[in-house]
Length: 603
Image (tube, rainbow, N blue to C red; front, side, top):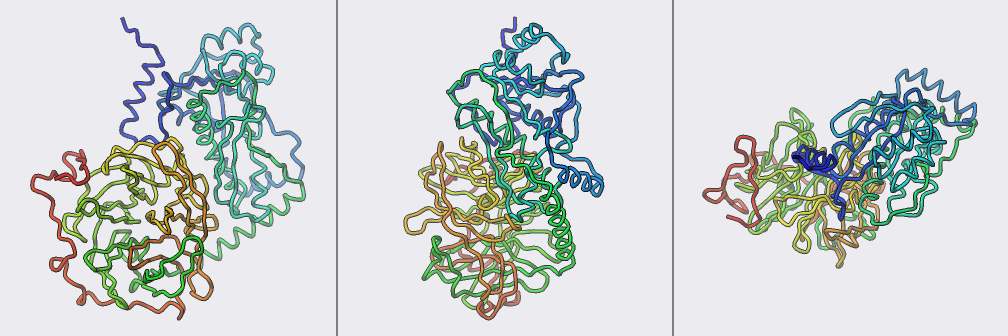
């Protein structure tokens, strides 16, 4: 006889199915079984809610069952001013496309989502109570008639969360998101909260993203793509919390849903038209050049009050572009590993060497079948390692030098089947920490910073319990490796609010442990008009020099480093700073698709 309960069977099935995909959230501690969630809703739900069900089905700590209410309809947002309704109608005619997050989707069975037999909207209270008791939910998420909420709440351990009409109305949902567009704000804060619930860590989830000024439809869809993730994070915290609130009805809504006035709709119209016009003008302008800014570190940049000061500029010849620099010193020689693009190159890792007022391109360090960038090169126990961004390959891989600086071989995948940007390793108190911004649900890679922890350099890396540790486009995405300055641990980050890589933000890491993370922003580094460049997004330092990449034209305040022709480059096969061959018997990077791990310092 099979005595395994259904919850346990589904738990094990999803655990094995998800084994190839690196988890982003730690399993809730002290939970013997998955959290049981019941969604009571019409048989057609907004696309964002169906996306939430799909994401929930891939977790190992949440079981979801849907109870369809046949014939029920989604609630409408009441009392929307006439001018706002006219604006939404005009934009709908102009854009002529359905919302990607609010379009109705028919609920159907899929792996990991249970589908109960439907119930009628006029079902008697006794019948409703009986059906809910059969399903034994811990929590009910409801788009059912309000009159049902008390019954649903009494039948569930954590009560009932009613979904507000402002999250599901196909035409008028999220109208408060119009206000950042009207006010010309660079960021939009989206907070999903429980109104009427007791104060608890899981009572809200927040993310700050860039404002989409080109159209309100784009602005709303960009924000609503985050709703499934914010709801999932709230439930994750609930599953991890020992606190059991009294059974009650709470409303799930966007926090502080201010309603725009009719007069605001006219401002929104002009704001979107102006943004569209500026976009067209920007599209016709030539590409802005990029350059590297190199400084001697006799007076290193202070992250509390950063100033570029005296520096030299280093620019790639011709149509080539260098970016994402990583400064490295080896036996008295200064190297800069960069992403090289332009011309026929779609993105590869090149190695430069700086000789004071001149520089040379040593050669190509790494090529992959797709674009790679953001090299992070470091030495560990006598060997050189490197990570790169390879988001198109949906992995974060570790490479080891077979012959430094141009010979590298892939030895382990640290993160699998995830779109990660700018992965950055840091060793602290006997553990390895991996920082990376991750794209979930087709969102961008600038808003949400995740942290992973391992006892070994080659993993396995487990998700940090505080994930995501930063949810703010102004300081989430990594901008170079962590470093210490004046006894403080500093994490450089990118400000991507107005555009990608507009500035570097220095954050002080206050707590870094396997269970807790805390940081605070210190300062923002942006170029002044005297230097010419207007933006920067990656910073790297060694004991003797610093390097920063930037966009714009250098002025006389930034004297140029001359790039020597290839004939002046020191040959790779002689006089290398570190000549490392892999030990005898070391396995190849891949064998029939399987990667071999390598412990730090092993032979």
